[in-house]
Image (cartoon, rainbow, N blue to C red; front, side, top):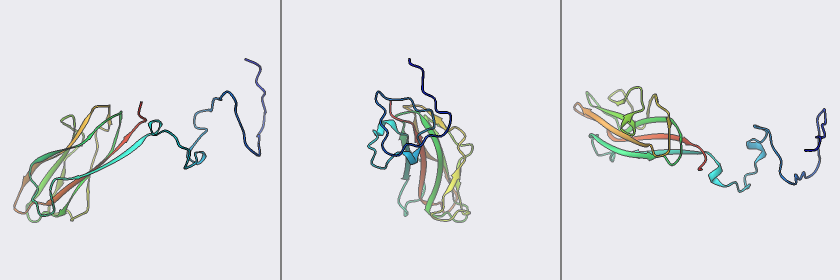
Length: 167
């Protein structure tokens, strides 16, 4: 390789710059502001944020023990958040307990409990204790317990996943 030409100070080039034969860009030298909105970058080279919202039943349906597949990972990623709520809040002693599981094992430090202290349409956040996952991992939301007199109706959940580029 030929001896590089070194400029010991700032360099300003007005006009278009063309690098024939490619070039190595230092890590972190290209950020969001440097990429045009219409750049046409292949989606397989980008990370993806998946926001999954599902419901266990309509707003007229009492919560009941059931399980729903939420996501099957195509590539490795991170579980960013999990919340649950209901369209009709429980009253009196009614409760519904919701777990979020990866391959059958909970990923929350404690289940989300919807009870008379909750408000309709206001979500309760679960604390994610196991966030990393690999391609092929399957996530499920499960109402594991329902008890009391007037249980919540229209139970729903939202999970947020951040996945890397598709190989």
